[in-house]
Length: 414
Ligand SMILES: *Cc1c(COP(=O)(O)O)cnc(C)c1O
Image (cartoon, rainbow, N blue to C red):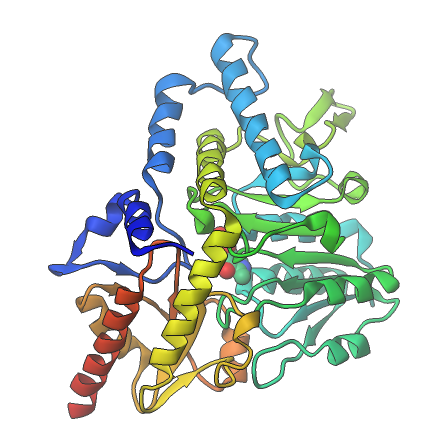
């Protein structure tokens, strides 16, 4: 566990944390939306443009070779980070959303009328809409795994829904609303018994959980760089070699072809078959620096420190009169949680509370959190979400607690 001094050292690596918001110190607890970036990541961006900017894979010249080498090195870094078997099973995309769209679109020719696709009630919109569209297009049926009041997926319900007609199931590893860590391995095993493929939306996972895609035996795994201290606009799709090989390309153009004539085009091998056009080279290279940052601190150290913040925050927040914490059973399921807390305050609108917190320097997320079906389940239109990162402190939790009380006082008076 980190001492206060060590956390201060980590904080010093994040220049943005010194910003003042309406003359208050910034308390950034919107990390489930995106994390801030440490100096080594910011500097990697400058370094890329200063020393290697060039297009990849095409040029024979020195800079192109250098950029290509860096890009392929990051691919290997990710392979190691998630324990994939081969680096060519890592496809670079814009992020989680594009990765899911890639799979849904590339599976098109595998889905027939009457086939079924299973997702769950807690999914982010980006893990709902692509499947909905695919089903509509192909006359397939979308089935939804329901949840318990505490937010946990009903495995029994899943066992009821799955059948030989199920082609793919796509669920999140960690809920971006409730912070629940789903026992995805159980779902993967069950799905495979029926020959269905499994995609896991791991957007909230990197630097929260140690990840081993081979141990999970998952078919597809997706996440973005920007929620793990990296840049926006870059992410990845992991897919098992055998399955990626069978899928159709997602987009067509340069880089993804072997031979082009006006009669026929043959496609490149993995991973390039899925990487049409000039990729986000800078994003990939800079992501490498973010992975180094995470590895230097250690995923398990980050995880246990964030758990400490979570435990403390749940304890403090749950003592507030009229607060409703979603997906918490008086702290009983806290060991199955990552550091996300979503809540509402009795008689108060989340938007009003969020606005007051903002004025006091606290960045929280308010609204439907990209999960309207889950909001409907809890019969609300929105929530306030607090989500921690390695640079947050217990003192910030105290300040947050104080400011929520202040917001309550101000709003209930009106
Ligand atoms: C953030 C998030 C997404 C979307 O990620 P993008 O980076 O916006 O593509 C999808 N699913 C979950 C669970 C998320 O937290």
